[in-house]
Image (cartoon, rainbow, N blue to C red; front, side):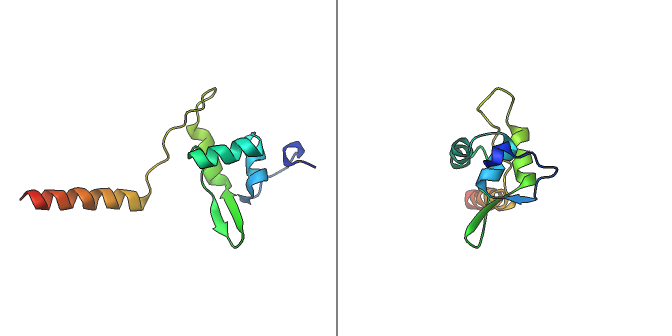
Length: 96
């Protein structure tokens, strides 16, 4: 039975792609296309599996405006913020 036809009393915390797509209400090809485009999270590797956490899927759904394909950029990671701050600090030191 296709995942999209399931009516679940609860959703698991981590999901493989077909179930994550059903959770977001899109087809698997659409889900994978949006993952590749960055509109949906990349998921995490766990052994041979790629899994999506329900919290990350909820965040992605919240960023997408109704009726729009455009999504807000995902929030910056701590590593990105640190890189930006170290980069600008290094440039300030060079100017002095």
